[in-house]
Length: 143
Image 1 (cartoon, one colour):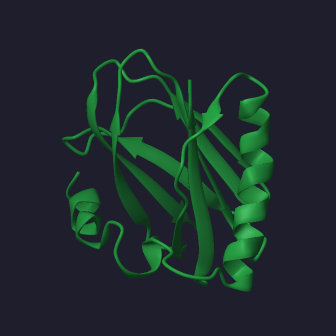
Image 2 (cartoon, rainbow, N blue to C red):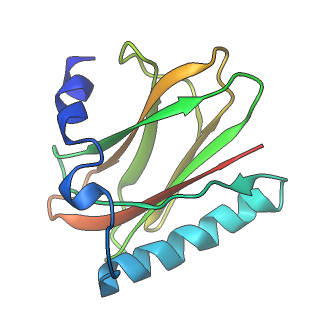
């Protein structure tokens, strides 16, 4: 998927990773995404260290690169700060092909869960259908 490869140049750059104090928008998004991830913890998923922040709007998704292992289950959870709907989380394999996931979307939160068939490099994309830019927070859980 060529579109995804274009976004790889911004992986973990600039606004995608927080170095320093959280802003109010980041704090709100972080609180909301922890709420969502708590449901997965009830099913035995452990929260992975690391929190990613970024800004998305329609036609401007953000992607991050992750190494995942077959035999594990994963949930990638995101929430935006302004409460707008339309947030989505997608997963792609190392060739940019979409991976079939179990999706969740409600209010300002979204998640994608799956168990990879093969260990390796994957890309997680956070997108929004809203025209206005919004700050999001992404975390992931595994078991």
